Amino acid sequence: MPSVVDFVALGPGGSHLVTARALAALQAVQHIYYPELGGKSQARELLVQLGLPGEKLRGYILPMSHNRQAALEAYAQVAREVTELARQEHSIAIVAEGDVSIYSSTHYIATQLEERGISIRHHAGIPSFIAAASALNISLVEGNEMLVVSPGKVSRELLQSVADGGSTLVIMKLSQCEAELKALMPHFAPHLQYYYCEFIERPNALYLHELEAIQTHPFTYFSLLICKSHPSPTNR
Image (tube, rainbow, N blue to C red; front, side, top):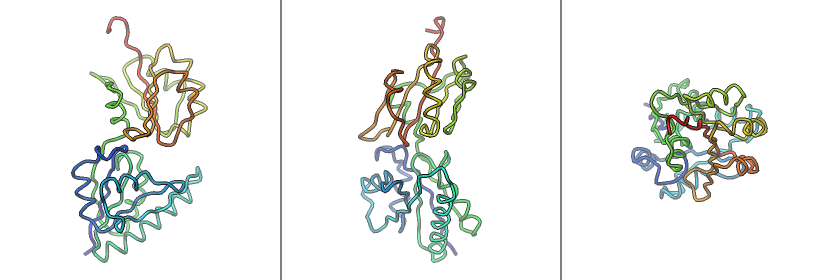
């Protein structure tokens, strides 16, 4: 009978943020698949920091391109390899940065495994925007406020809805909407507080909250922006 494949969330970056359950799952398996982007892998660095032996680690190249075809082919190749190993009853984990349920590329692999009759099991992690709010010592939402998470998309209407109050906006995948976002930010600056965060909880982490500093800083792949409305005078 094929073994169950574990999908393990590594959290936003710091080894201290990997859950005990996630670490136990990684320690228990024979093979750990992790993504490499642009010749580098934050996931591998974290796995090494956690003391996991190198012979367990299997990297797969994830192409950095707006053309998704190459990435889909990479996921398909991993799914084929993992299927064969699972059918041989090898124990396998596939890691995701952040959480496995929020914009995780591992979803594509999981879907293909299930189509091949391979069972999967998720191990939750800390999402990057939760870790960012903690690092900033801010509350994301309070009372009946809504939390809106946008993947690389921004509009005047979206920012206006936050400026009107009652919600907090988290924009992820900032490099996909950098020019449009930077053009809109000054217009809403009197009404919104911006928090730019990159490489959250890592040694090279950066947190910016002044508009000018955010505007002049290039948005990286591992970044997000939290937008909150300024409290009204009556609520201060």
